[in-house]
Length: 385
Image (cartoon, rainbow, N blue to C red; front, side, top):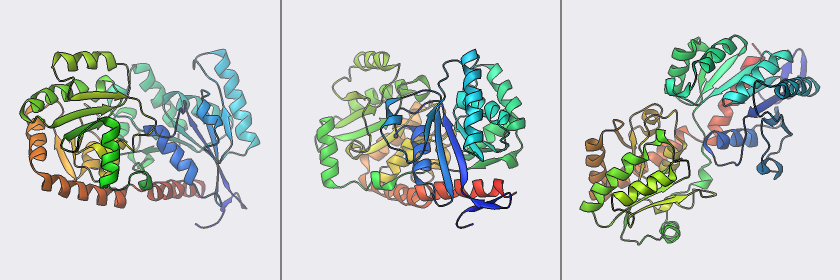
């Protein structure tokens, strides 16, 4: 439907309130996807509002062309949170909010309940997590199963996530729609000689090095210990090989210790956090992901957009994302990972073929425009049904 939408016999824009626990920047996984959606919505048809449960400096830097409001909530079970819920209800009524879309656990629980208090029936829950590991407490699963009765629709970022939601939250499959992550391809142009050289200068790699890289938070589920152990084996066979993980997290000191224990501290580096990973990725020859579980990895499609060959674990949304543009291996299977990595290190032509397939796949399936259009279609459909 073009132009404005018909709501209760009148023509006006659709007011959508997006809410997330917090957003420290625009380049995080879920945070980045929400930013892209809000930024690119058709303003002739939709009026987005942006809310969080915690204040951050980024919110005040003018990145969003939308009203921003903070419902400061430190603990869900508190009198202060109840007050914020009533404030949320007032906001929804004053701004005639038609749809509430939530991201992350606390924001979902808070907004689903407060939105219901405001009389809003169109609660849309974003889901970007997989399986029992997501439910740190059984009580959380029970809450989510209760909230399904006041949630209109769920949006999952992969078929694997959709299957998990249906299984564990006991939701009708018809109420769960899949919209893949979108990627701003202008941030990830194909690698050129100059971008490769600039990236390698930043990471202090020579042109002759073969760089195997990963972008990941330094958390247990990313299984970076596995990557370090593999690097020790590969480095002994390929003196030109270099390994890098871009990211930060609670395991940093333990991982640095493991690197020293494997005697690979001269060929393996942890960069820590960087403001934008895009300028660093052209340094890679091969990109990896060794997670034990993934809903859908932004890192994979960023690798592919640059034309990098990908080796990833055959878990969750990785299977959908990689397709035939890379190689999959069973999580924790060191033998298969090493065999695959060595094959790519030794075969430049294969790296180029896989990289080219990845770039084409991203352009077809994961554009920002497609992701935004699919959301807009869902909003129109639920308000006109």
